[in-house]
Length: 263
Image 1 (tube, rainbow, N blue to C red):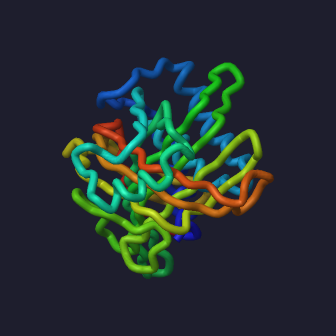
Image 2: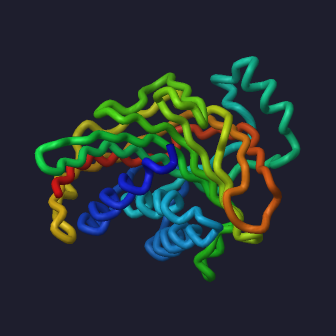
Image 3: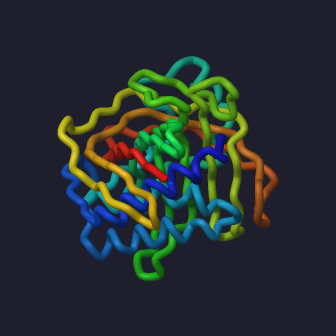
């Protein structure tokens, strides 16, 4: 379902540019204006990792609305560590022992209307990164995992999406490594949302870009859950496969964007 992501990103990124605002008050590590600018550039630049471009843009999009970040901790969540999750974690433990130093959550709820026909897509996911160099404005690694629906209703609390599944919700995962300029597509694994919540009153980010008119609201909140996946290289010079052991995220800052675009 990775091919469904670019359209969501293009419209949502347009909304982010028009909004040009940031008011996250959620938990996490505070970001100064300089750190925030460096992180946005670094995450957008992660598109140079093989063919990761469109997906890495999710991180830069989310950060535009935030003043805080969370992290991804190694291991399945202690709150929700099923026997199957523990078995998978044990089988890949040691491949990547640590978590990720930074992470944010993102939910996009998108409708696109063209010639009186409307299509719906949603994306709920987490973007993590490791090795941020604020001076060089780069990251060493980036990981994105989540779930897509082709309806107005996104995944909710206590949901597990199977990565690579052809049955909704469609789980997806990608990993990028700067050293080998490599990108990997997840073929199996799980993305789990335990809880997420957003402020009831959203802020307006409506506008128009290149003859595309859209209404847009955004709200800040938090996400808790976990994910793990196995993947194959799609571009670059790295190893043929990459296995992401379970990492979990606990009340990380998240942004919810609801966008209706008309062409």
